[in-house]
Image (cartoon, rainbow over all chains, first blue to last red; front, top):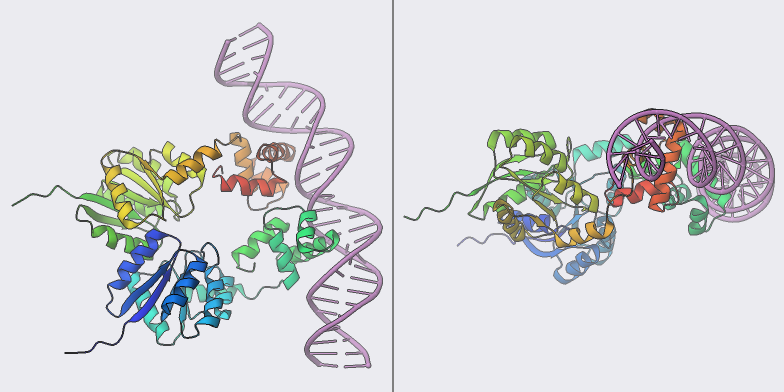
Length: 207
Length: 207
DNA sequence: TTCCCACTCTGACATTTGTCATACCGAGCG
DNA sequence: CGCTCGGTATGACAAATGTCAGAGTGGGAA
């Protein structure tokens, strides 16, 4: 009798039941992969990880509660042996950078096939990194954010279209200062106004 | 020998290969369902539908090229026998309304399980309608758009943060008129300014 | 240490935006 | 026929926003 190697124990986290379930089914077809836990939100993913200590956590980037990167950060501290792989629908350049900074080992768009994903899971489990070439190219060409920390913060507060007075209150700054930051952010991003600037920064994943 | 009834022939359209493939695999497990075609974009979905004439088309709401509702509209004209079922990640109230108006027979969020989806496919195939109760409640409570056609149009042109002058040019209107429309839209939506109005209208699916 | 840069603020000014009154046209309705 | 409503426009005014100059602080790099 041949003893097969221990399978890779997986945690799947995605808020869409349809995707999560389907993914679990497909990955289970690979006999060296084993889905040991599923979660539908950031906090739940964390709890499941603590309970089951998976080898690899496959996390959706956008989840209610806490996004994939946030979960990855916590995981890094609590379960250093658990590799994290992020999958996402909308891959913004900046997200990739943030993910890598959080110790994520793999970053792939949902446009890959399940077969390919299985291979990537094995790659990550083996201790290697994998980043989708397309996303990597985007991230490189988009470059670093030219915004200072404060500019980015103020821009975030401006994201929902709030007037300057409200932004100032939320950021605990004087309205004049807020306008200065917004103005410089708009200039740096070469946008028409702050709303377009918010859109641009979002597209590049800088907020 | 028992003759089983002819299976329901399905078209799956979703731009995310991972989801589409997984879904196809899961639905194929049901022996009365048969996936006969897959597509990754709106136009492709249309072409596949023409070629394979499926009984039920399962369409993602957001796809490159043409969204699910647009595809449904074309399908209704070209293949009246083909029932359309829309699945979506972010179910906005207005989308449901538009979908129903386009002759869509089912509308469900991706949070349902594959098992449930299979049942819904059967329901739709049998000629019945199915709308997720949660989404239906949202749609009812959100009500109809209070915006006139022009107001909605101008609001759309304003969506990317363009200044009034640019909106006016794109809409072929005088700047003053644009400001009037925006002002009335902002009032109707009880928003702080047009950017917040755009956000609100988007959330409710009115643009 | 000196210099630069991010951070913070103020004041002033020009431009853009939001609001309102008013007006004309055409379609649909009682 | 007269009314109302949506679409279009203008002019005027107030408020918000964008831009700029200047100025003080503190931390880090040369």
